[in-house]
Structure formats: C-alpha cells, structure tokens
Length: 368
Image 1: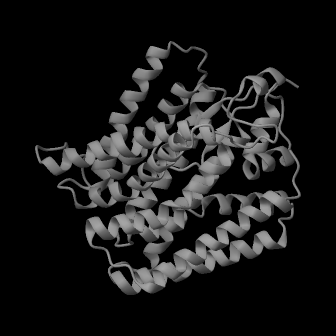
Image 2: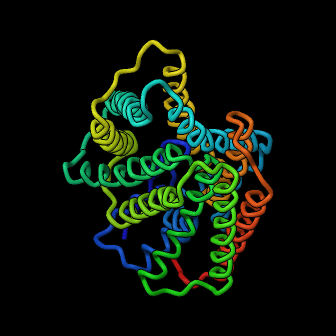
Image 3: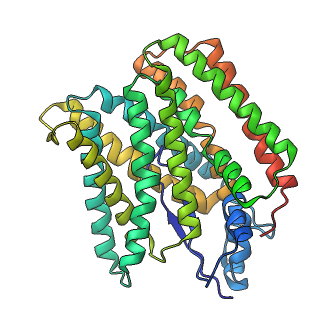
C-alpha cells in the first residue's frame, strides 16, 4: 500500500495544540490499531511510513525514527525556546484580551479573521489545486474543534477568573487524555505504569486547581471545567483529523481551519450583542498584534521548525514546559499569585506526565 505522509498542522497558535498534529495517509481504509498507533506513537508511525529514499534523504531522523538535530545544539535550543515562549504566549494573550477595551470574543474574532486572510493569501500564492468540498468541510470540522472550541474554552475560563497558569496546566494534559480515550475506545491496554502516571498527573492538576482557587478566589468552581471542555474539544478534533484525513495541503488546511475558528468566534461575539470593531486604543492593537504575530504565526513557525529539527517526541515533551513558563510569566506580567500548593501540584503533574510518556514509549503494547 502506497503511503503519502506530509505535515498537516492543525494547531497554529500557541495554545492551539496539537494536539492536532496529524499525518495524511492515502489508503483505502485505516484499522483501529493503525489509528491508535498514529495517536499514541506518531513519531514511530511517521518514520515507518517513509520510503527508503525519503529515509536516506532525511537529516531529521536516525535509523530508530527519533529526532536528531544534534549537529547544531545551540540552534535547536533557540528553536525550542522560541516554541515554548510562543506556545505560552497564547495563554498570556487570552489574559490580555480579557483586559482589552473590546471584549475578548470580539478580539479573538478579529484575530482569526486576520489570520484567515493571511493564510488564504499564502494558499493563493502557492497555486495549489485539487481542493474538494468534502476535504474542505472535514478540515473546517477539525478547525472548529481544535481551534475554535479549544480556544473558546480557554478564553471563557480566563474570563471567569481561572489563572493563565492553571489553564495552561489543565490543557497540557491533552496528549494523555487522547491516549486514555483511544485506549478505552479501542479496548486496548495501557501499561499499568502509564495509568499510574495518569493518576499522578490528575492529582497534580487537582492540587494546582485547589491552589489557584484559594489564591485568586475570583473563579467559581464550575469555571475550572471550561479548560477541561477545551481539552475534550481538541482531543476529539485530533481523533477526527487522524481518522478521516482530508488530503488537503498545508495552506488549504490552514485556511479552512482558521475560517472555522473565525466562524466560531463570530457567533460567540454576536451572541454578546454585536461585533465591535477595534478602536484607536493602543492596547487593542497591541493585543491583536500579540495574538496574530506571536501566538498564531510565531507559534506555527517555531512549531514547524522544531518538528523538522528535533522530531515529534521532543516537541510533545516541550508542551509540558509551558505551564510553569505561563505561571511565571503571568505572575510577572499580571501579578497573579503563586502559592506552594500550585507549585507542588504543577511539579506532581509534570512527574505524572513523565511517567506516563516513558511507560507508553517503553512498554506500549500497540504496534504500528
């Protein structure tokens, strides 16, 4: 069976996660085991799908399929640092949007409208053809879940008083939730050590939420369900993208997904009354610039560069560095309090994540 694998990035912004990174596989059908392999072991799947010439030409993978990029360590460190900063900037941008003169929903609507126009220009310049209505609608469905639904939950959570650090920590559990959902759905077994890691991570998240609730005191208990709903949305979108690939190239994929996110936030903004145009206030334009340049295309650029330089596993692991970065950033920029319970919960969550990922990598039962 001929396989044609190419990068398709659903998550364009910092905090527009992956995890919607998916691979388009041209095949007549895809078994449940193949689907689980894509979601749980994407780097192995990607490398095994390359033909011999592609493997020989690739400077990014060794014979085990793991990312190299060690020939220029300083450049790799700079790229990974830029990725973590831009990914974290999405949560900070949501906090900035909450304080802007226009509503956060209006801000994000204009952000995605502008990003869609830029992406559509890229698509037009690329002169790519062969876009089908079915493929376009599939990518819009993925974008509605991985961008629109995900970020809507994040924006609402921060608007209700959940700190940016706690929101980042909850949403960073998405790869683990994807693993748990696909394992239960496909009736496959995770190693017990991986389940232990998931339990430890969940406990850490609960402690961080408790510390955030006690420290800030402005968020209601139900507000902490909003980031969880955001995680569920992006997880479902990732599974949809993996199970029903559209066959579109990256510019068309990006345009379709951004257009869907624009529609989601336009509906949300109009639900509050009407879409307010950005005024002349400096903060409004600074926030828009932050969200479009730094969070969207900065995050997208660093994300793509890091995937090609150091591989999927390293990028996936870097996602878990963003919660402490966001916590420190928001404490410095907005004066959000950080207490011992939050720090302890975050450390425990990161420990659980590390245990789960190592267990999946070393003892996983699914074969590609």
